[in-house]
Length: 473
Ligand SMILES: Cc1ncc(COP(=O)(O)O)c(C=O)c1O
Image (cartoon, rainbow, N blue to C red; front, top):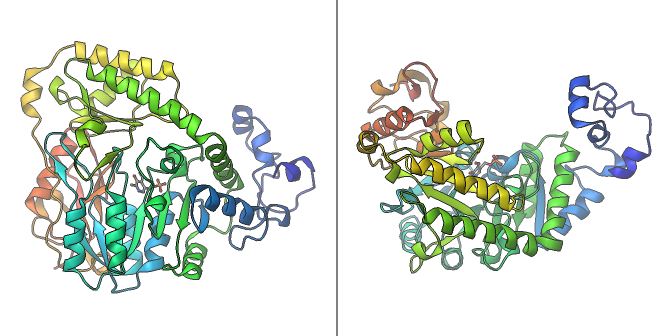
């Protein structure tokens, strides 16, 4: 890419800005001129993502080698695109697929695209921590035994909070039964590169896994990777699905960022991650010393089926009488600190190879200041303990419900109807309702209560009273 940019060839091809000469002045002033010279299109010199034979092929092979995969694929539509490819590569219409219900909505949209039949099972909800952890080996075993025709098992590990399932045990159990294991490892592209982090999906032996290189490592936003391992997956089918799903004009800037993020991890990953791990652990200790706050660590999961990526800091604020949403807003407005996510009880902080000690010092000082304001007893009472109402009754396959004749109803009037859309609280994007599922009163109460605390309901029409699309009777 650099060679091509520096060769200053005359371009009579796309992109229309012609190496930045036609770009808006305001844009060029802010980012500088250079970036536009590597905003390229598919040319012989820089290879073709749809049929890689040159530098993209080589970059993907290096990625496979670094991650311990047999084949790696660059994704320019995020992990969403990779999850779609993963589902479409393994499940045809009518095929059963076992899905842990802490799945991101992109797994469900993959199910809608494929016409597969999901068989959901539930992750463990931890009442002490007030959050969904991950799936237990026992629950996966029970689900596999119940659905003997299932083709694949789809898991999400780590979850948003960095909690992983016992992947080695689960994968070996699934393999013994001839079930393919698909992993949404959006939050785990770094795991393979440090011995103090939980085992990565590929190291545990999964067949396919998708990682958001852009979420945790040095990939630019939208850049992810799909990895394939072993011979149980139909490799040409994966390639076909990616051809179907991905743009024919992939961004070379995104692809270069994937290649360099891979290089960074392969050459100095352990050193960079050691620093992030130390910073996170030190901040965790300091936060745990602040009265009214707690931040769980590896010891809290010991002896259970779960492991923790310690670079995630989940700070529980419920003792302050404030919701996580409120603390997140205070940190942003008053301290200029933006966290990854908030829920009713927690804020979630991602510590990565990009953080410095100063950043963590600033976070700890801000949390200390917020906690020092004292609890507000009236709001403490007002925050109820809300369980996500996962696992309502299914009446239709998701694809059928999604495409069925439908109508919009205010949430409060939708009880007993069949949802036609995926409804989530975003982030984290874990579906509260899936197309085909009955809209129960607990789901309605859950969504309305969380919205009243500042959560964003995704998948509804945002009117005064959110409207949900349901299947017409
Ligand atoms: C577990 C999980 N999977 C998939 C995605 C989608 O990833 P992307 O934003 O890269 O499309 C997300 C996004 O938050 C996620 O949390």
